[in-house]
Amino acid sequence: MGLFYRATDKEILKDRNKIITEVAIPSLFKNGLVKSPFLGIWFGEYDKNIRGYSYELCRLSKGNLLEILEISVLKGEPWIKIHINIFILGQAPKHIEDLKGIDGINFHLPPNSNTKMRLRDDDYKGPPLFYMLFLPEHKLGTYFTKSGYESELEKLKNLIKSDLENIDSFIKRWHELHTPLVTDWEGNPLKNVKHLNSHQKVLFACILSTRLIENYRIFSLKFGFGSTQVLTNIIDNVVDSISKSNLKSLEEIDKMIVEIENITPDTEDFDSVMVSFALDACVSVTSTSQFLKELDDKWIEGVKVCTFDSLDKFIQEKLNLTPDDIDFELKIANHEIMKKESLFQQNLINEILDNRNDKKDIFLNFSKTPIFDLGELE
Image (cartoon, rainbow, N blue to C red):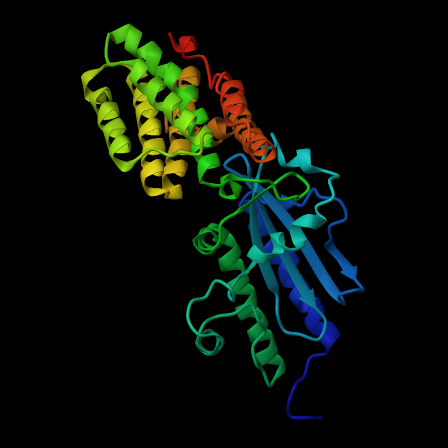
């Protein structure tokens, strides 16, 4: 009988898989992840191709964020490999089960797979040698005896349990390292604002801003404040300039920004939620003007933020929601008009890219689509 104990590959595979079924999966279920609904996924069956076991789980977050988590153990190695990848679905499903039966293979192919993060590996900072030597990994450690083997299994089990009970910290780390790709339900990449050139981004911002200006008009009529015409004139002039491929001078842009500031309401001066909608309109037009000046995408994102902030406030008012309500954020993210707006913006981007020379026509057609009816709150 030898002095040292050596577990067989079959035994090591079985014991690591036991950690997954007894600890990993229950911990993820407690965090709201479920067995992946996609067609053809593996969930614990022995896979001869990889000589091991694999599991795929999913979760919908904030309405249209699809979080995919994969766990695998392969014969002949000591790891429990856990990968996370996250996508923005262009159209938000109502439930994760809406994705049932859809082929999700594209989520695992480039370019989608390029943002996959392995826990306790890709998320570490610093030289690989450092974390290999000093930081914990999802790996069966070195042992020399039977009791040593069992001790290393227990250490691995406890680490897996702790990490997956706190999976949201790894989700947060993923967002620090990557930006979610926008896809359809099958994982096909969708076009987004980053695909637009500068003139197209201005057009996109002008259309979103115009739809908010209607809320400013209602506020202005009710309280006798400001001038809707100032905002519409600025947007019309900007659309006209990009249609002629002739952007405004810096002096003209600065003048526009001052004009907007002069008609921007102070929320403390009005005891009505309408002032918030009017403010969003002014900030949106200002952000559009600032983009003309700096050509920095943060201003286009600012326009989008104004749009979704207005939608957020509208839903809160319409449903009488407060931040203390159960599923507060989920009720807002899953509201039908929030989903319609995401689809509207996706269709707008597609239209701008497909019809590059018809800027005025696109503006006229899409700016007519109301964001919501503010009169419903009166």
